[in-house]
Length: 100
Image (cartoon, rainbow, N blue to C red; front, top):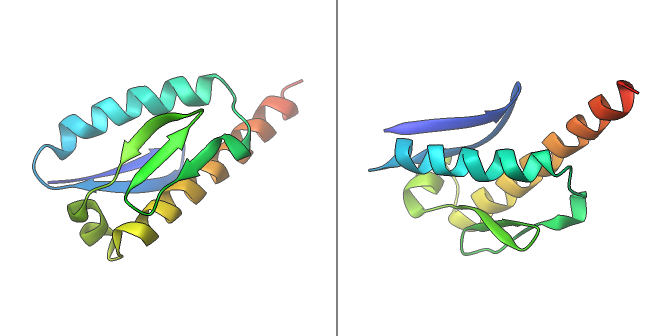
């Protein structure tokens, strides 16, 4: 199966293959905790091997199946996932600031 993760209406990335739903539920918990901490953009990092890190903790580990579902190599899918998470953080920070 394939699971498309979003933050609000912003697409983040795709998880695919066996166990995608279970992986997605774990990733959502990690992302929620990360977003709740209102981190800085520079705290989102990635490695070409598939890991997206936030505050030095793995948020998601993209696999070859995930990258295939995204139609990209693992390195590009990982970079795109990190960019999408940073973009969601910008939107979150804007909404928090706007609400003051």
